[in-house]
Length: 304
Image 1 (cartoon, rainbow, N blue to C red):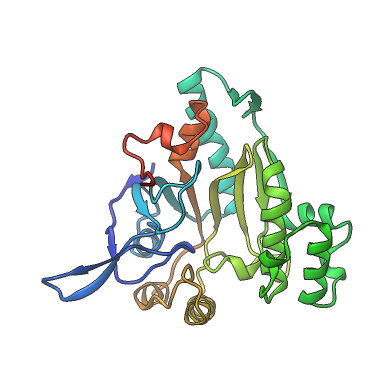
Image 2 (image 1 turned 135 degrees about the vertical axis):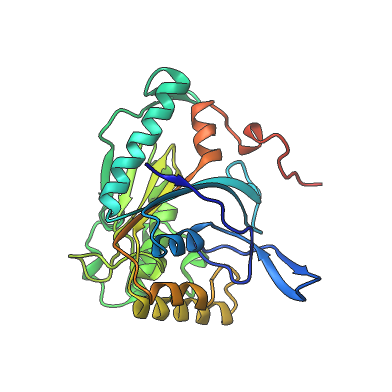
């Protein structure tokens, strides 16, 4: 069984996602704080502390755009299981969402905005590289440089401004996927094996160099869940945090810094762990046939 936990809403360091945080100040402590953008790092510190199966249903806050699928504050389910990996998390995700659909709708067949969605298991599993290569018509490994891949992306239909300044092949692959592939993933699809450059908390893939054991679940063209085999190597984690910190210093407001408290926990030893995050609001949108996230939040953020 999983144990429900509660972790702090106020953090000293953003982490667990790439997002711009809300900033605040604690008068008594005379300390700058931020509202959490994810519950991840504190929950993984609990795994280090000996809790082997834990979860939190919590509110998280991201100082970013508002749209039919984005609200500045939203509810996430995050869970962590020791001695599991991203394959176990895929199976668990299928079970959780199918069970929710059965209990709410009495069926795993869902009608969403005039589209029939089948949640019947098993769901499609396909790598990000495979989807991107289908759009490019050739293997990603055939490109000699990021510049060559950037040109191919533009030729395939990606706007130049989106990939301009993107320096690494891994980041370009992710951009191409977002622009050309994401919207087409209508039926439940696990997109697997993300590039290391866009997955700073995921374990390196056991067989594929430069990739990680990470997946995101897409339904009706939008991300519904994100999970990975967790990175447990403190040296590798520090290097990735430092790479993120360099991006932050260069002006990337969504990049995180170096979380020394989390690194200190990892140095004590973290077991192999699978982690999963599900966006509750987007799942409720699917199960209630709601076109906008505003329709399922009692008091959504609205523009003036």
